[in-house]
Length: 189
Image (cartoon, rainbow, N blue to C red; front, side):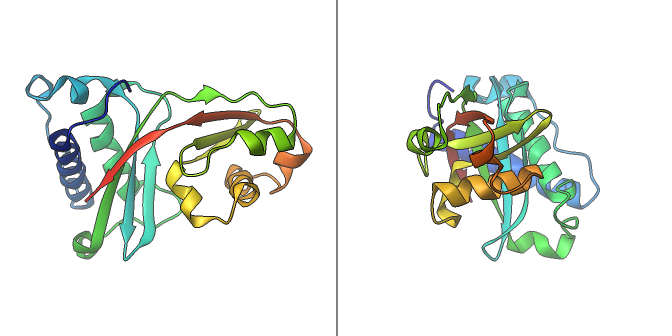
């Protein structure tokens, strides 16, 4: 992610996400994209997460850490998946659509975070700025930078991330885990 998106590009992505969400929930095909008509930034290979909320509560969130397809297509697919494939929630239903708010997070490429101790790890994390990926062998989990707003500090953030990964909440203290960080450009309806 070299440059920030323009306000028009953000609006286009939010519109595509909304259309994809509505089509998916109504059992219709996703909107067709004519990539050459989009800006270079929306045609560029990118990675995104789409987060759905209802009355301020999380209702679904799906995305990818690794860029693999044009940003516009990535957002469309993740909006549909957030509605229908987030295992933590039942599928979004048509009557809910009017109450669902859409947020798009455009990610930078995750970078390894080298650290020597648990204190060094805590010192190197930037709350509200860093998205974090924890990995222990084949297990991994991530939180977007926005999750920092919901926790009281770095230790709680890492404990919740371990829980999400399906391991003991204090594993980050007891074992040297692989850690990646990334940043996002986040915007919402």
